[in-house]
Amino acid sequence: MSKIAICPGSFDPITKGHLNIIRRSAKIFDKVIVVVMSNYRKTGSSLFSVEERVELIRRCTFDLANVEVDSYMGLLAEYARQKNADVIIKGLRAVSDFEDEFQQALANKSLNPDVETVFMAASAENMFLSSSVIKQICQLGGDVTPFLPPEVSSEIISKLRQQ
Ligand code: ADP
Image (tube, rainbow, N blue to C red; front, side):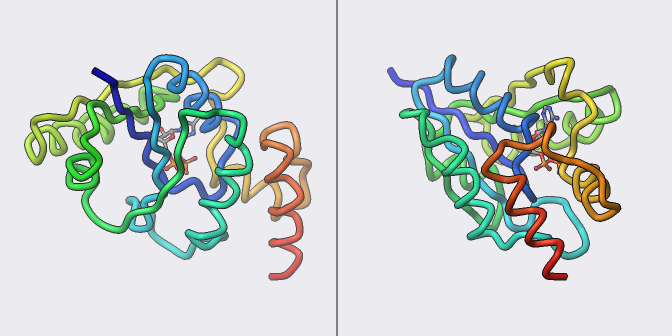
């Protein structure tokens, strides 16, 4: 039976850290659905709209035949049910990610017992990467190109110039 995994997040914007988790997941599972959660635990306004984030992820994953990109506003456990997903993949950067992710995994398990949360360790070179760190560096004029897929670097620079 084919195994379906979901990679949820805010992806505002997608970084090399996210992409690394998506690519590794695509090697393990038959189908990977990357879903931009528009209400995903983040407060404050986002830099990219949900549609823009979906489009950027599509461009970065076009070579991965078993990866789909979607967006959803609502409960992840419910989305997983609708998609018949077996697994929710979460990338873990540091111990600091763990407590919150563990709590969410337990909540999702109780809302949808059919879905398992699997934690995937961040690769060493991406340990410190988060969308918010990238936005801060970029806003202060730093070079973010080493941390972002090339499709995203030019977009974030022009987006921040418009502000
Ligand atoms: P961010 O913290 O960068 O805003 P998201 O909230 O979009 O990221 O996170 C989506 C998922 O990607 C989460 O499971 C998060 O732990 C994971 N993730 C984010 N950045 C990295 C990274 N650099 N390496 C591995 N996983 C990551």
